Length: 286
View 1 (tube, rainbow, N blue to C red):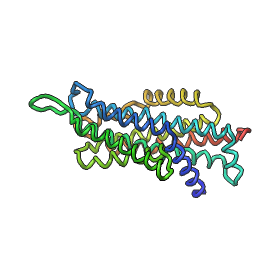
View 2 (tube, rainbow, N blue to C red):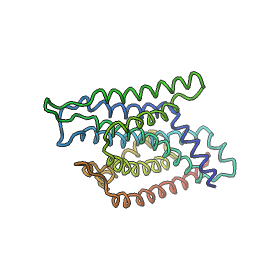
View 3 (cartoon, rainbow, N blue to C red):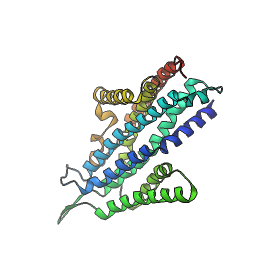
View 4 (tube, helix red, strand yellow):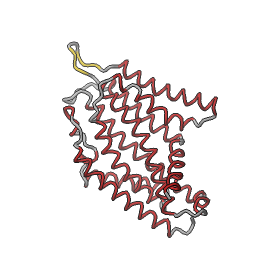
């Protein structure tokens, strides 16, 4: 069973990372985060706070779009008969659904790795106060943007000479290029604790969107997923899954907070996938 689950998840992750929209989302989110410090003209009581907060918010929003994209591909597989080929084999529908959700979550992890590195670099190179004024480390930020461009060039060369998939190679090379710059700055590692809290919420978004996609087309799935995300942020507390205040003054999210959020994320994700599996079992067209 675990071998089948791993195979489905691996295939789904590669398909998600190899989609051009995935590459565009990762590039837009990371590049926007890195450009922001060169555009900000105010200090919000802490160096780099604006870049950090906007970067984490972008991780949440663009990550939700990645989850919705994975759900849309699942719905298309159910409608065009692709899923029927897999389900002809001795493979339960629930296992196939869970494998698809796990694969989407793996692709989401690659996206968060790219965005996490961008947040660390953008905050480290944001405007700092000096005797002559406040200014960002523009050469450093341009270097990070150049690293993204170099990753895309390497992906294009891989496609040209080795026949590899350009979006897949680009999605995998971008986080490597950005993390290669991390040793040259003084990153605020507490940001990663907040990114982990965002990831716990996005895992639930993946499961929720996957369950909806069993019966709903991509449009309503996207609308209900974003509506559910907004409701969760309001009623569960925005500061719980997007803990920006905890990072003030060089702080981090307390391990106890993450320990409380993790079981809730696991239980909610399991419930959504259980509902999705039940809907898939009653779907006659599979």
